Image 1 (cartoon, rainbow, N blue to C red):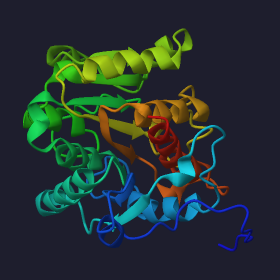
Image 2 (cartoon, one colour):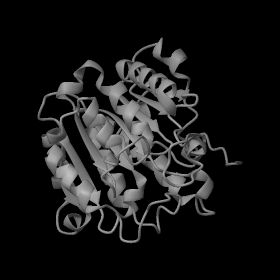
Image 3 (cartoon, helix red, strand yellow):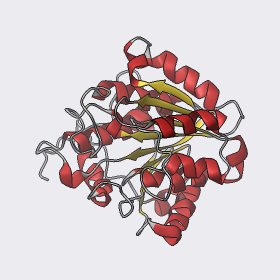
Length: 299
């Protein structure tokens, strides 16, 4: 990618390595790639996405009027090698734990939604019993087995209290009655897509943060980009017409970054190899990283 160079228009991305930068002081935001893909329910090339997001970041600046985002210390922890399977999950959990311990906010970029298990477990650490989870997702992700359709169920079985899970954007015609009942049995708070037509985003997120943070522990936010409308997220295999607008998911990302309770986020379900020619889905994922940073700068 050849982009113009302008010393008065510094680009985002190209951040120093985590190991080097963290030795010089605490990073504000750490980027970590967790390129899960091998257990996806749909054929995917999502393992190519972290690299594509890093490239897309170079198309943007870190400038936001009224917020000193450019003053934040950004670092890049690279990618976890082969994060699928038991051994891979253990490596991803350890990498996430190291990043979260050293940083104010960690953003894990996938990969399919299987990354949410090691990302959340690494972020929670010993605080798992008191932790909370917010998902922006068209799907409940409560399926049996191990796949990108099972991370929320697996986290509950690992010890996360379902009463501190909030799922925003759950779509009609994209789930099943059985998994809807499972969500209710777990005590999960569900905000259906239709509710977002009549409720302000800021109010929805404030309620979600109150529920997820009720235990006093850290909150992890899963930004599954397939919650968006297919017109803006064609690179998500399961995105459907009628989902969130790009600006809506960007707003949720900024509000998540702004909350002191949020220790970590993940960005999931983007397949860079299946994106539109203009790379609109990957570019949206890159902007979600920057929106989280803008939220962090506003704390």
